[in-house]
Amino acid sequence: MKNTQPVKFWNRYTGREEEEKILGEKALRWVYGSASGRLALHLLIKRAVFSRLLGRMKDSHRSAREIPPFIRDYNIDVRELEKAPEEYASFNEFFTRKLKPEARPLCAEPSLAFPADARHRAWQDASAIDGVYVKGQSFDLPALLGDEELARRYAHGGVLLSRLCPVDYHRYHFPTAGIAEEARRIPGALASVAPYSLRRRLAWLWCNKRELTLLRNTCVGTVLILVIGATGVGAICQTYTPGAHVEKGEEQGFFAFGGSTVMTFFEPGRVNFAADLLEQTARGIELYAHQGDFLGGQSS
Image (cartoon, rainbow, N blue to C red; front, top):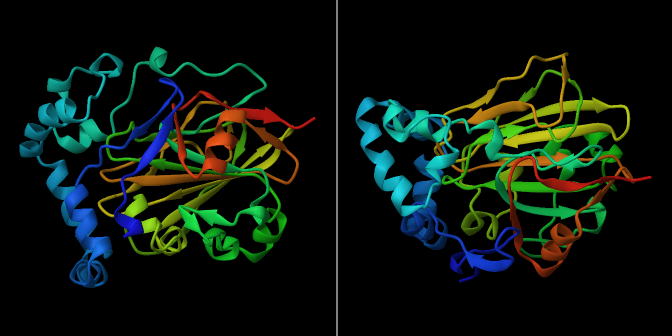
């Protein structure tokens, strides 16, 4: 079945295609690849109560025992961590970890920066998208943004889709400087945003709980930043000050336990995405790149 095929991505740093090592892969295959799993999804797994219960488990002191095997099994580079692994009081505290400032150098001005450690796809024109994860799937912008007027304004703009895996650094940052408005909360479910589920139903992106922030920049216009929750995400936590000026690379917020997604929308003709990002998207796979790395440049 298409939705249970291996998940591959292009690693910008190794220069080769790699296969993703997925946390809870067997469970995901069952939920999104079988009738009984889909029944469990609709009856329980996508409900907020399921993610809250899972979040409480990951907040417990006993959950700290999961940190060493997680680091070992998913090759987490402990040299990047702000604290030593044994200093985290729970798994969720480790999951929402901060990194040393030097671990994520920021690309030079006036370039735009990736907002998160993630597997990324990008399109210069949202209206030209004819396949996301599988052929024939495209974004329903009015549903995704929860705003018909914004959907019309950004219908031909650039779109960046950044998928964070549970093994990734789970704080997200501003791609450029500007004035950040208060986030608009859009209620929804909490289904998985792993490729196993998105290959079957991209609509989970606009059915899930999400928050939309408008970032006003004098050079690239208003940038829309949409953060999307998923199964196991106990909270979307915005840490910036609404209405204040923020710098490029400044932390915007973090996700509690679970995989998540950040989508970034640019006004038409405002951004030229990096060549390798567009190349891999055209090939139908994601590009793995770090927060702060070169996303693209401003259109002249």
